[in-house]
Image (cartoon, rainbow, N blue to C red):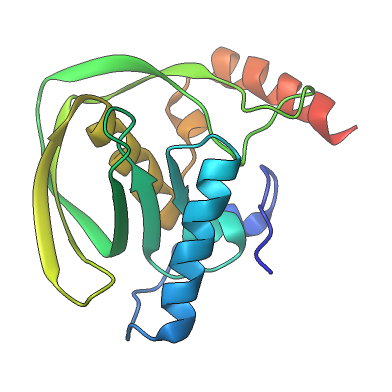
Length: 167
């Protein structure tokens, strides 16, 4: 049974290792992660968020609800143009048990490659919200959280809300 890991759990700061083979267990885990993401009204979920230190994630584009199951994703390039968007995370919860949000600056578009659940090599240019999601989720695979992009003062404001959740 997969369980959500929350801010403060050391696994969220672990750099994940590549997936060596696609097997039935991985496919079941990906399906379970999609269900968890949807149940919690999320748009992305990375392996370390459910306690697994391997490089895979699931994400959904909000407009058309297209699901991506990405194994060993890698961002190949990103635009120089950046944009600010509000981000939250299913692993960074506040006192109300809901994600805490903050404005984060990231590249506006990216090109990403990955292996899908069928073992096929894929790549896509993404912009806007999908680019934001894939950057956020691949950061998890490198042990980074969206709060790492915030100024010290803003990060402290977010962490105060997180600490209220833990009480």
